[in-house]
Image (cartoon, rainbow, N blue to C red; front, side, top):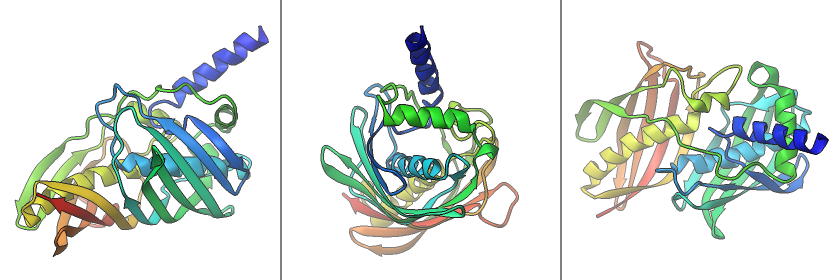
Length: 288
């Protein structure tokens, strides 16, 4: 009876941590210092953006940091000084993530991270910082504690992730070397159940995904190529939480073209606001 109830509770937690949780199991752990994790991308999803490599790796670091601070605080809107992309995940791939904690205090967690597919490094997170905020403002500590125990034990149900919401860009203006588009953040989406149940916030990694998609099109036009592979994201600044239903205006401007590489500056502003809610620089490798 107790075993059946425990299995039921574990499945319920697995279902809740499904829409935007990219750790299936913590496979190795030095509490508060380092960890390795695994996430299987379901074969039936249409796509799995490269930005979610950073999300999966950052989530592993978040679980380690939250546990070290006894589920009092959690990192929110963490950023990396530089993110290097060496590959793109595909449906059916298994991500092997690894993090090393440099420091973890009540104000912030600092860490390094990597993601691999089939033993090949596809992502490097360099000098990441996640500001710590009261966990209870965003989530339920008891639920997180229980799911963390599941991750450290038998692991969550594999392939529970379904799909991300469709996030189309509405083109607004385009001239040589720059483009502007509108992104409508959904008022409701399954991902907000994970990010976060008590205070829904549009994930910064999805914002960067949409901004880099816009910039990639501009880079292809600027370099007269056919394909732009994302290679690096740097100087990321997330200045405000983006709430459900927010209308964002995205800007991408080419800063440098040095074939085969193109560097662009990105900005996102909430409708009617002058101060950006997010900005970054990206580097693409453009091929013909």
